[in-house]
Image (cartoon, rainbow, N blue to C red; front, side, top):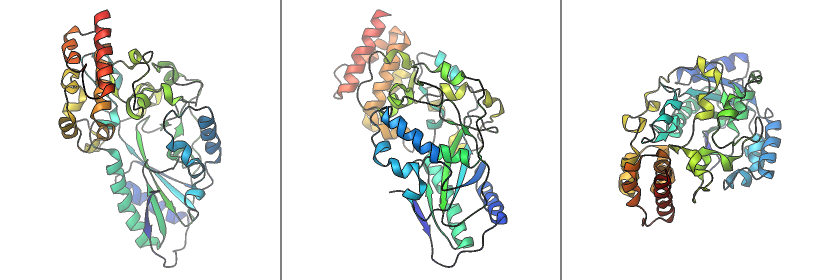
Length: 359
């Protein structure tokens, strides 16, 4: 599925700068924190960068990035009728510095975005509400997207003036730092567009310097195969043993390059309750997470994006963190999983014990 389409075939309303302002007001009133408009031709350079990323085989096992590369590179290939693109952002800023949790070796560090509700569900619900109103007001055809279709949201956000892609390749905002969830609505009529935001990273390399696995071959380039977010979420098999010690206690995703960005001085805690960390996911004990079976895993992460990776991959990550903890009291927990039915779990358990013994 390429996106949810809504619309009718009545004559379109006249378009103007006033329409753009009215639509932006609607978006902000619907719970988004940032909005901008671009056209379908705004990201041609990004398509070439994506091709280079694929050519260098930096996408790892994410074959879906290559399968529909043309769709990502050009919105008109994805949907020939698109003429305007509304980009929206919701602030999910945390109430604390995510880097602080790295000091607690017996606790699991979960990426900020995954500590509560799945943002895809929250954002798509709001997009569909806006879409229904746009159809009623402008008699148009449209499609809505939130990270589940071949759409290059980050370059589009930059083209629409929401922010820029920093040297860590993520969106940075003057108003919200590194903490924006993105959504898009493709429209089949023209609107007044916003200015491309422009890069404001300057000479700063904080995001590159902090990366534990050196996943950035150069500024604005990412090698996903070394990225902790990729390794703990997308990578299905055992993680290379040379990289396991570098994961620390990061058991789902990594926020290091986001957290260290100086633009976070303007960030603020999200006002959306669905993005506030659940108590049990703020500083979860590794000992409790390691013993989850499939049923208890599904119960704990119901409605969470973590549920997507399944119990085996998640417990694999937890065991890597146990091995990195230096806490000998966790050896017994790992020992109980050395014969787990899932090979990646059993392998991770044996590695954890070996690490703790050597420590």
